[in-house]
Image (cartoon, rainbow, N blue to C red; front, side):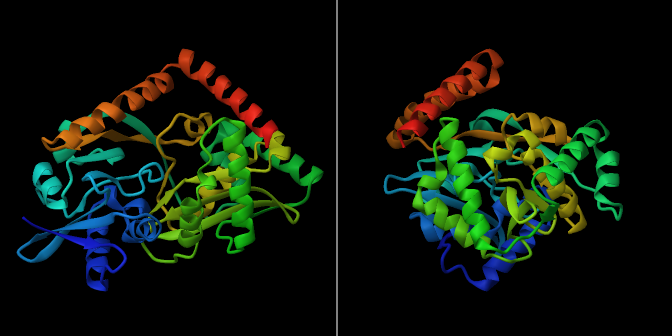
Length: 360
C-alpha cells in the first residue's frame, strides 16, 4: 500500500473524481460529511487539514481526511461538527492503522462519529453509540396522506398544529432548498440564542464556523449540496434547517425555530416536511446524527452505530493526549447515558444559560 499526503485546498479534479467514485462503491460512505467538498470547506477555514491518499498499483483506492497540529495530534476532519467519519475506501481494500498514522505523521487520531465498518480502528474504539436514521420512500401522494401513512401516531397532532399555525400566524409554506442567505443568518441567530438558553457552547460565536456554513451554503455538487430548508407562516420564517446532502443521504445538522412559536412544535414540523421533500428529491436516507432526542425516537426507522476513541502509536504525545481527553469524554458519556444524571445536568445548564442570557 502506497500512501501520499495532500493538501485539500489544491486537490486536483482527478483525485476528487476518484474520491467521489470511491464513495459511490459502498453505501456506508455515501454520507456528505465524507465528501471532499466538506473536507475542503474545513480546510479553507482551519489550519492543518490534509488528506492521505491510499494507492494500489498506482490507482487511488482510499481517502483519509484529517486535521493535524504541530505536535502530531490528529483529529477527524471537522471534529465536533462532522456526524460521520471514516477512511473512505473501495470494497476489499485492506489497510493498517499504524502504517496510516505513521504516513500521516500522527501520534494519535481522535474520532467521535466513526463508521462502524472501519475495522482497522476497531481496537481503538472506547465506546459505540446509536445514530438514528430515517429510511425514506418517495411517493406522489399529498403531504397529509404521506404523513398519515408514515407516522399514523403523529399525524393527527401534527396536522392539527399546522392548521392552528396557519390560522394564528399565516398560511403555511415549506421551501426545501431556500437560496436566500438572509434566512441562513436568521437560522444562525436562532441557533445561537438556543445554545445560550440551554447553557451549551455557542458554535456560531466562533467566526470560522459561521464562515464554514456560509461557504458550504454555496456548494452545489452531486456528492455535497448545502441545503437550507425553511417553514414559513405567511412571509414569516418559523423554523429552518441547514445541512448537507449527497445524492442519496441527507444529514440533519443545524435546526432552530422562532422561540416565540415553540407551542406549535415547529422543529418537528420542519423535520417531517424535510423528510418528505428529501425523499421526493431522490434521497433515500436521512441521518439524524448521534445523540438522544425525543423527536429522533419518533422519526427513526433504525439506528446505525458510530464509534469514538483514539487511535495511537507509541509516543509520549499520544499518551498525554489520551490522559487529557479521555476522562472528559468518559464523564460526558456517563451523564448522557443515565437519565438520572442527564436531567439534572440539563436543568443546571439551562439555569446557567438563563443567567448568561440575562447578562447580555
